[in-house]
Length: 181
View 1: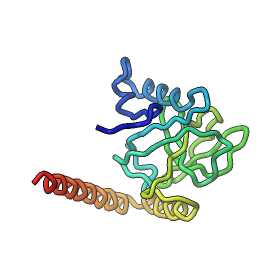
View 2 (view 1 turned 90 degrees about the horizontal axis):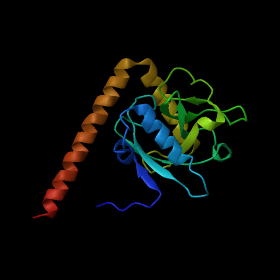
View 3 (view 1 turned 45 degrees about the vertical axis):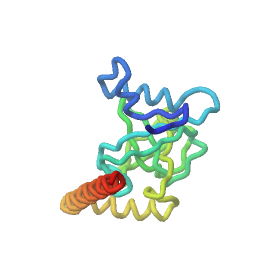
């Protein structure tokens, strides 16, 4: 059993709420949680589904998002935004302005349309795996451009990542089995 802080919500919690059969409903509920009133920091865990942030984020990764304000953000950070009832977890590419902010997926050829300030939901909580600082953002963007323009490189990277995930799962299972003996 995993114990979580009281103000912590996972995607599984959202998916099990009544009348949440559509992604628009889940996105709206998630937005409401992260925008919650008061000074309580709200965190949410999400599973990544797309490939637009390769190699920084891979399909199947579980990431933690913390609520924040536009003033807290710096270019290079990965943020969560809501547009047209869809969630986008992309990199902030320029300082925020009163008119909004611009994002871009690391392996996408162009920028996202400008987001209004109210579209911001939170930012990725840095972990050891996701790195910190500008240098990891630059490296991620460089590799992302390779994946953007080379379908073969993208397929190879996804296949290698899948093998790594399978072998890591097998190693965890072997470790668990050895503990019970």
